[in-house]
Image 1: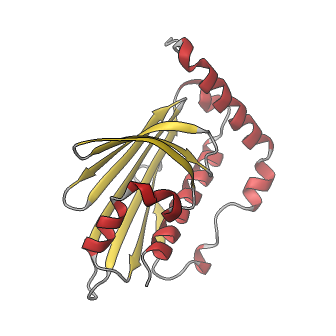
Image 2: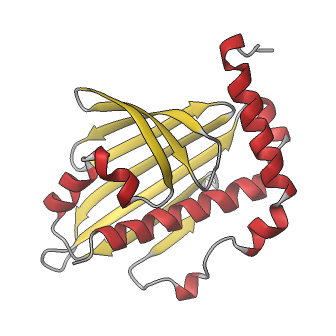
Length: 195
């Protein structure tokens, strides 16, 4: 059995409290869960991976050239206005193509946690968090669409619990939040990169 370092006990307890609050209010969360796929704009598509259901994949087509999209995505200081899930960001540090930061998600509501963002080529990025019993990996990929000055943004998220946090949040609740997060980001991409 792996013990939690003393300096992390407060964060783990805060996260456990937040998860208990979310579970206690699950009826409201289910009522507001994911927008109906049929009502989503035709350029927004998503699905859960059948081979590995821990993943949700999505894509959206935007009317902007790939280099412009990529340049704006790399400007992290604009992320809180670009992405509506981000409640706050702080302590941005960059070494080469790797950023570390503290970020707070509205959908997961777990307070600030340490994230690592790696910009890769060609036009790819990976964001990870491994803190307080939650492991998440998000991947973004930018590709040229068949139409001129149009970009396809692919966004995939894997989320899983680790350790005892899995006792407090069901797979179903975790999957609903994951799907909601993917849809939110796809719509944010569409809004941010539409003329």
